[in-house]
Image (cartoon, rainbow, N blue to C red; front, side, top):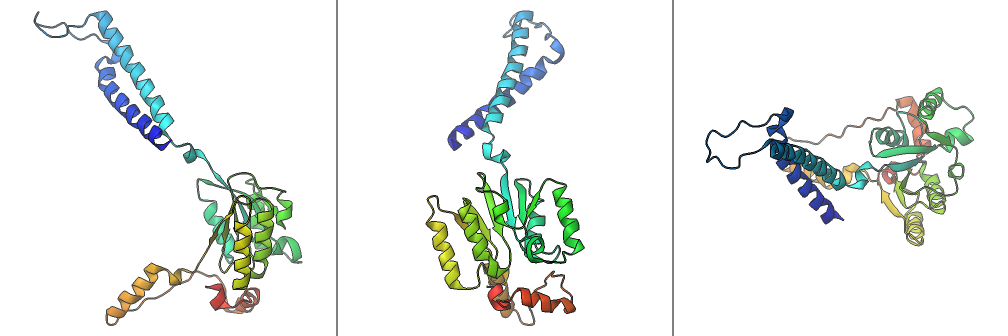
Length: 268
């Protein structure tokens, strides 16, 4: 299929480029001046020139058609995204993922599951309700659980799970039960390594195995380790990490209570 597309693209390009000078040569239907010498090569009659002109235009149309066929079908497809765990706008990783997905031309956010604010929370903040109303006006549906989304996800659907760590295993299993084939799991994924191993086995044991991608903290990436090593080799240098978390000091207690697994495990 790839070779076929490349062949179409090459043929279309050659045909189109070769047709341009022919088409412009006869632009406006003007016939070239008669040759000044009886020995001039290839004298064209009016009929010959008309055939050449319309033939070049037909060649250009065929070329453009070949170029259209060479365009990969996947370029026009969008991936449906179901996000689990939106959280508080400007504070939650789920909200951050959601805002990024809304900017991606090949991603279509169809549903948002928010178990806390739409489930157990008795006093939903206005910041969340206004954010939800804005997205609902764009056609995005909100739910308190994956059960409300439907019995089975449509094809080409990615489930992004970014809820509370202790709740993630349950959301993960519920997504698998609804036929999820691709899951992005925000770090740390589960409270314990044992639960992560169990989730891995659940995903791989399906008739069609589910692809699972797990987020991780950038502090341990190769490029950060390389920067730290380079800084150690240069006297007087240092590496500074800057965060954009919007928590105020008086709100940290709630943050630590919500992320009860602890900072080290959460950042693993």
